[in-house]
Structures are given as structure tokens and as C-alpha cells.
Image 1 (cartoon, rainbow, N blue to C red):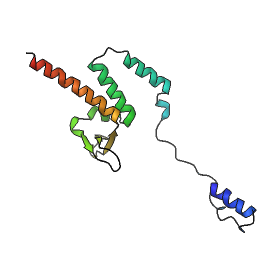
Image 2: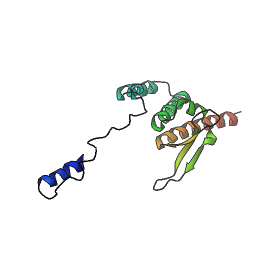
Image 3: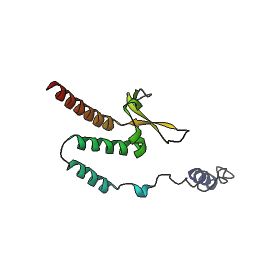
Image 4: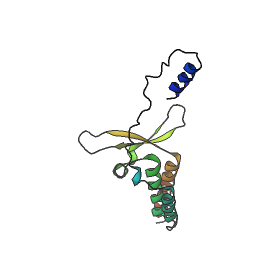
Length: 147
């Protein structure tokens, strides 16, 4: 559309005899998004969810819930993929022009021809998970050393 207009102006000004871009289609239709955004939270709804989480008593359950929500929102991981994810599925990878980052490999479906995909974990997600892991480890160490 932009090129058609540009070359049309050149034809009108007498620089060109004909518009070589005239045969291009006038517009194009983008494919419909596969994501159903009607099921997504609005910003106000998401703020309410976070407010409700922050209203929970401070403890491991609250931290775990925050981690799960953070991972779901920032990565696009599906609930069943998250439920099946294990510690062994995490790895650190150096990507070109980026600092080292955590990658989670998940199984897309449970059929005999399972597909795997790698999900980049944003720093907010792995920081939350690290805090949760450290609190659980510290609690275990405290229990074993106090006996």
C-alpha cells in the first residue's frame, strides 16, 4: 500500500509513465490469532489477583503461588506442562547476545509422539523459584540440625 502510493505520486509528478506497484494487492489479511484473548485477564483483573495473593499470610504457600503465577504469565506455559515439569527439565543456556538464562523443556502432549519445546524463563520467574528453593532448603536444614 505504501509503495503503491509512493509510485503513484511519482506517476502524478511525471517521473514515471506507469505505476509498477499497481498490480500489488491493495491490502492483505493477517491470519487470525490462535490465542483466545477472551480468556485472558484484563490488567485490572490481574492486579486484583496479585492483590489477593499479597493478602495471603506470608509463608511458603504464598511464595509458591506467586512463583506459579509468575511462571504461567511470563512464559506462556500450559497448566499440564507446568504440572509435569521437573527439576531435571531445567538447564542454563547461553544464548547469542544474551546473558546466560534458564530454559525449561516441557512436553507438549502425552501421545506416543510427544513433542518437546523449550521455554525461556524470565529472571523474575527464576528469582522467585530460587527464593522458594532456598526457603525450603533452609527449613529442612534447620529441622535436621536442631534435633
